[in-house]
Image 1 (tube, one colour):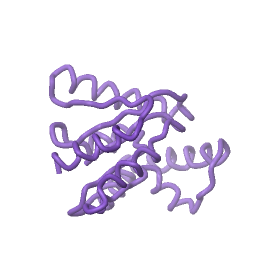
Image 2 (tube, helix red, strand yellow):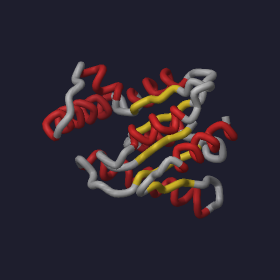
Image 3 (cartoon, helix red, strand yellow):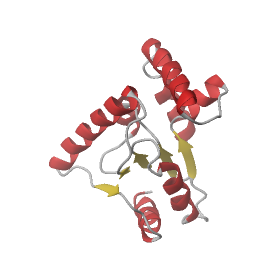
Image 4 (cartoon, helix red, strand yellow):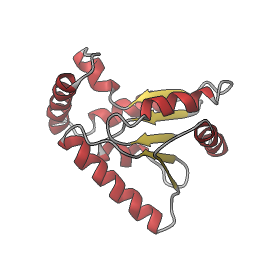
Length: 162
């Protein structure tokens, strides 16, 4: 599995699609980690108001059931094809889905967190990844400007681990 994390508006979805295009024969599954709440709310718009609405709804749900999104993500990733998950911000989801030494993490650089959930969630995920890196348990790729070589390189890494 390849997981792309980063702040809102830093190119996670675009990068996921470009990596998938480098794997046409494998037909990778590309999953937006926030799709579960969009489906739940039947909300497909964009913008600050929509983001605030979705963030509040997801936080309310996760307070009652902290593993709701993780169960949804697991149901989406049960496949015999390579999986690319973009936009994960919840540390419960990340630690429940990510397998050190097997999965790959790409972090997009820049942007500002859209809300407190995104800020604190990514801080926790980054702290966990920093621990794994210090212990030499996982490599991580940081991407601030990606050209054509980055998606191809990431696709190759995914194939090597898949």
